[in-house]
Length: 198
Length: 68
Image (cartoon, rainbow over all chains, first blue to last red; front, side, top):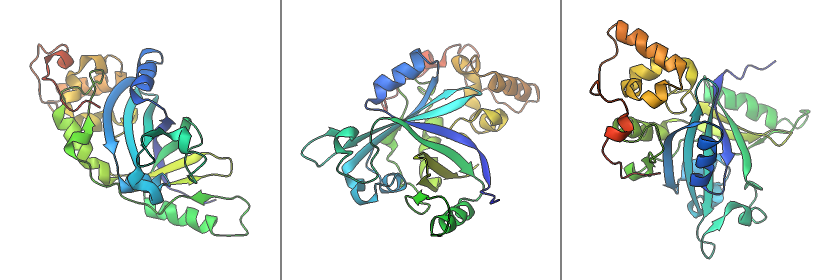
């Protein structure tokens, strides 16, 4: 049995058409606490580990974290496209670009790996073994996210981190430090593996 | 840890971001964070980073122009 060296669940992605509206639902109905946002990301690293490396400069990605303490952190992901004759939401492109999410809804399950390179080696060896029983689709090698501009990290008026500039600045600096990669398992579930930077 | 707000490392979280201990709306909903804050305060490891009368830091903080 392989040891992927997984440490813990990081968060679960939820792909949404509108970040503000979705955040309102998860705050007001589901009781999550809103934390930081990253917005307006035209980010090669981010797009690459999502499997969008060939169109990274056409995607404008925004993220928002919400936490249900002691239970679960969710990361809302809004992906808008640019350069296709205007702005289009993700479903519009789903039939045009391989690996784009087919619809809004559950996104990758994000876990932390103690040694992401070791985890990647095990999974890529399995994926490249044509005699293996199960098919894995690795979307990229582990990649670092491109650094953020200071203006791309913030907290909305509903965030617990409103006004916590030191924390937000630190979170923005950490953003590119987390090497990560994603795969699609045989059952269509996306997994995201994060380097442990703690 | 800090980036995704895992609840299993509250003391580590507070060591990195002691300001969190003063966000009442957060500690009220996050028992292990509140307990860790109390432990760290008792042991003198948690600095007071906001005035003690900051019951709602979100109201006392300056406007953050970096709305997400």
